Length: 328
Ligand SMILES: [Zn+2]
Image (cartoon, rainbow, N blue to C red; front, side, top):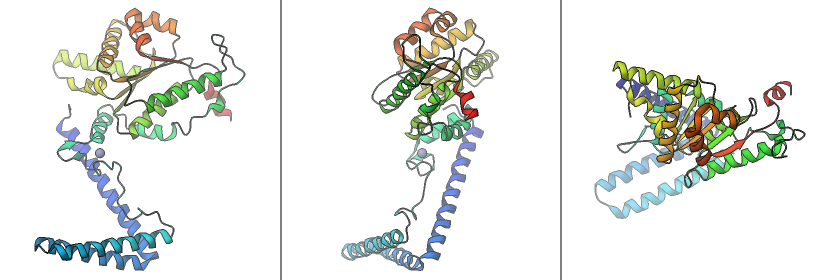
């Protein structure tokens, strides 16, 4: 996994903090409900003593009376639910709430690391924890087609900016839906300010929420990291594993390809990365402001041919919507 002890401890401390937060918030909810419905606190006390009695009898091997006690507990729990619902609370209001239900915020399922641990490592290694804040704002539920003009027509296809965006949006939704069944990649291209990064965030949010590992990089930062790792290797003090997740995460997003300084090093790293991910059937989403012609010119034939044959090419057209958003 390529984590140092310090990094591992940082992640585990975060899990412990989350567990404390969960306990506190459950205690606060319980306190609130007990005040409003005092009978519930009595029911809980009855459930607790019946559970203890049940455990004792199990130890002393009295199965018949255990069944009776279990029925009693079930009855008390049903009463509790009914009281809660009557007072307008959701049924699960007094159950613990986890950030990750799969491991109950422990980071482990049995002795195996949970998928959320893997993502926590990615977030820490690539300092991308702000991605979570961004995707809270930029996701499919906040993506609006209203910003795309119905007057602007794409000279190439005759479709309006809105129709083109609607198509890209639909394809991104489908990409997410089919993610576990179908190996696909996305290449989003078009001028600046057309919502390409926003769409990438929409995809990231859906996949993060369905327990996939997502690594997000601007091209600039990605190649800076590669150069650092390469330099570190030469000097023999690098962290060779730092690249691991970039090669094997479920979805890699390379945003703003073409803004980095393109040289032979960048071209060969990019080719290796895209090629490896295709070979291992790991999806990649690339966004770029370059036109296809410029992309082919900049990254040469072998990269262009990998992309054009393995990526869904989605074009965005129109005027800069960020300007529109500001004046709305
Ligand atoms: Zn988990």
